[in-house]
Length: 280
Length: 283
Image (cartoon, rainbow over all chains, first blue to last red; front, side):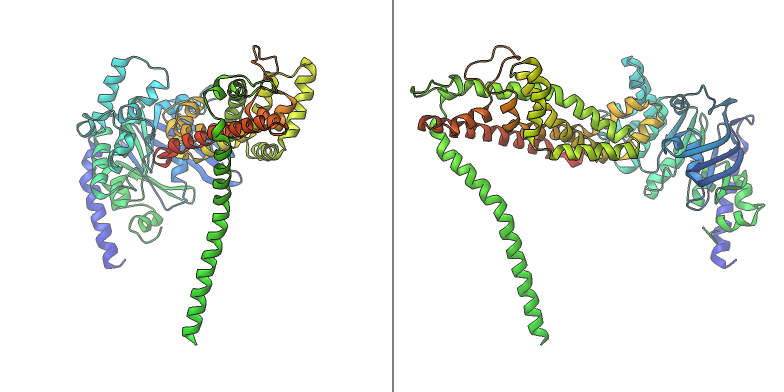
């Protein structure tokens, strides 16, 4: 290990240590997701191999690993978004708070109302105003009560720390917002339908450092109420905001433990090599 | 030596630029020639009577093309009524639902249909509708124009829907919005301007169709009171007057051509206005 590696590793473990008390402070351990023997393939290409993992409720779990390791596919299997690819095949089970979300009677549309998602590239609907974007999930599912919509609009924007910035121009086009604001708008949009889980696929990778830190603060705030699973390429980010970290490599779950353990004393050599930046 | 080759290359460059410019002008010049000629020949006969009177009997001067102008709008209305739903919904199916193999076949067939000469459409509809109803009719004229529109509208609708980034579909589906709601309230809404543009261009295209109407709408020197009667249309009237031996009718034909051209040009201008900020809205 050369000097810069040592320094990087030291700062990461410092970050993880600093963040650790937050993980310890959470309530009784309950798993939001219980994933058993999950295998996902697209056509003949197996992307995830025999993954079994429990994801803690009201905590932040970071999914890390090099590009192409199956992180995003894993995330998308948690709200059945991977099924949008026509040749996707899946075996194994995923339970959300005890209920099999792949049960034959379960409609994926209903799963996605319980498990919200924020994407890498912010994608507010360009034909809609800020307010319309936030309430779209409710309106298109048949909610017409104006006062209730108005209330959800305000709470969602407050939860996503955007309210103060947009309260005077709720009817302005959503695409008039800055990149960071657009991403927080997408978070507000996801929160408005009251999901139990929020999946985030590299939500800050296209943002500048200031906007990134706002998103990170927001995640720490949101985990009090929501279960958060976040895919990230940024080791510092994983160390700063997550309670648990899962390391994926080539479709395998290599190691899964508390973030403190993963960044200070990983059990597997591969994990150590990855988090210290020696490969990937 | 180097100096020479440099000059030579510059010369070739200038030459190529001039050649391509001339070819581009070759496209524009005829348009202005046509427009100038029709304007010159037709403007003298475009007056109030032209828009309000029926064609005058042979031997009488004056008269107008009121019935043909109205007929063209009626036929376009019928074509839109029948053609737009099939074209738009077919395009939505193609872009949003169809499996790649199925989509390939539909696209292939639609492209062939777009190349079918319009007179063949006319004969087909004549056999299917006119012979059965035992009369030429506005219905048959509207339907034949609709049939010409459908493959055009289908392809343009599909193309603009494909331009809507998949991120919007994913965002909507991830909110627990159902597939059809996502398509109708998010995807189509995002692409609406492009779809309307396609519709207007298809209408402009069929507004000038003549051959298929000869077999179906047939034309009418009087007002049509019922859609199951033959109906007049500008292109038919221009054709009938254009091949006649009377100078007065020739003048009327030029005036009709001018009005038809203005109709098509104004549809195109509407499209331009509509698409001015298309990309800021679409992507």
